[in-house]
Amino acid sequence: MRSPHRIATHPPDAPIDDDRTDRTDYSNPYDELAALASNPLEEFLHEEKRDGEGDTAEAEKPWTPPNHRRGRRRRNRFAGLPLAAKALVAVLVAAAFLALGDRWALLYAEHEAAEKLKDQMHLSAAPEVDIEGFPFLTQVLDKRVDKVKVTVPDVAADRISLAKVSATATNVTINGDGPTSIKGASIGEMNGEVLLSFDDLNRELGASQVTFTGHGDDQVLARGTLPVAGHDLKVRADARIQRNGDRGISTDIGGMSLQLGDLATYRPGTREKEGLHLSQKSADRVARETAKAKALLSVPAIVERLGVPQGVVREALKSDAKLNELTGSPRFVNDVMGLNLIDVAMGHPELLKKLGLDPALLNGLSQLTRPVLADRLTLAFQLPKLPGAGTVALRDVTVEKEGIRVRIAGSGIGVGQ
Image (cartoon, rainbow, N blue to C red; front, side, top):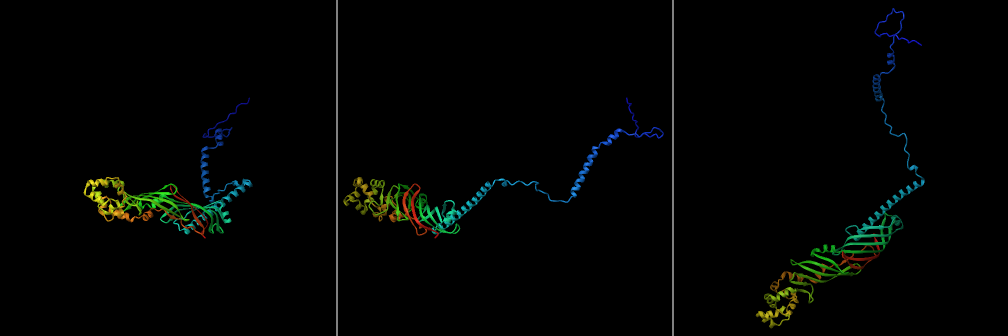
């Protein structure tokens, strides 16, 4: 068995005895182990130092622009598509550009056509032009358009304006070499309609506060008030609508009457039933009231119109009993209602006052003749002349709820020529 080896220890600070014969060098094994291991604090300090040295080196390094290019180029997705798909995409893009160009050419042609119609028809605003058919450029190259719709609002026609004129033209031939050089067009056939709105009539002829409503297929009723000599008289009239030539509409005004409250009714004209006549209520008051009856019988012209003998009139004026006997007969009331006060009472203003009538109103009614009143209520109009040497004619005329509708047809019409 091997004996343990003794390790001599010598304090590091102890003096060395040079006299010892067996002298050996002293070393601490723990110091040797510590020397082999690195100091962590020293490593930390060295790392901070190295970091500082790196920053300095990097700061001293000259600046170069950063490189943003990726190390690997992205793959083009379109490159991976098959050839047929690429061709399809190209065709779709080309078709989109062609469609866009076709629509632009269409809008340009519609605008130019609207401006030409505005100038030739002397319109206040350009009409709406709608060219149908797709594609438009092929029609231009063929110099023929399938269908064109035109709408013209608020067309002046004599005293009134037409609310809407719409027409559809077919077999249209274009004069020009391209969409931007269209000079005009020739319309082979045209069909349309004209609307004369009752709302427009009420507004344009509303100075007399008269409203128009449809009645049947060809009749229009006029109802409202008409100012005469400071009095608002109720007006009633019936207008029958009919064609007047190829472009005109005429109205036959009938049944015209003006009511002065419950006193009298005025019908313009010279026939027996026309003129100013007392109402049933007013005639009854004349028969009941002695003063009014005597005032009426005091005018020889009225007595003559009544057909009462002069002797009977003289006795009635002297005796109230005789007067009541005369005015109490049913014939007397009817005869009084048949009197035309326009003819017999103009020279007797006192009589008019006793009957409750204003002499100034009577003068105004005498000037309101049948033609004058009919002119205020007429709905006649003429269609404006269309451009070109073609023919345009009115077809049927009907009265509807919203107004008077007229259908038109034409051919050989030129635009912009």
